[in-house]
Image 1 (cartoon, helix red, strand yellow):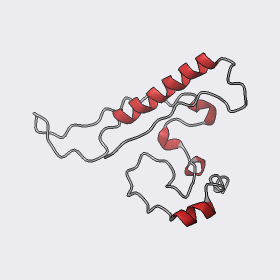
Image 2 (cartoon, one colour):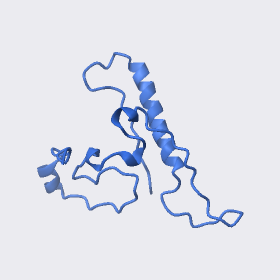
Image 3 (cartoon, one colour):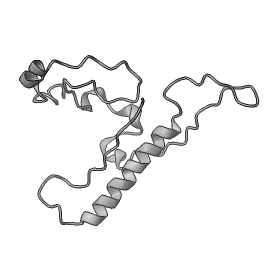
Image 4 (cartoon, helix red, strand yellow):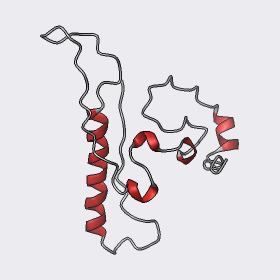
Length: 125
């Protein structure tokens, strides 16, 4: 089964959860909804194997909206995010919209030794 989890994070992690909480939760929910809509507008994960009534293969709509506040980071769309900015962790591969085979999970012993301590170790390389 294919699935995706989008989480709306609405605080800065600085202990100021009460300041503008409702406004930030609304913005986080709106941003999450825009990400889900953009992903759904991309089309199917797998190639379409059936044809439309006119005989052609349906094409995905490409009406994605820009990433919220992406201009602050110099990013125009999802594909402009450098791989170095994506989190690296032994539990999986860097986040991407590309369909890839799932990597083998590390053993329980190896997971305890490595953890995610070096999740951002690849930044700046």
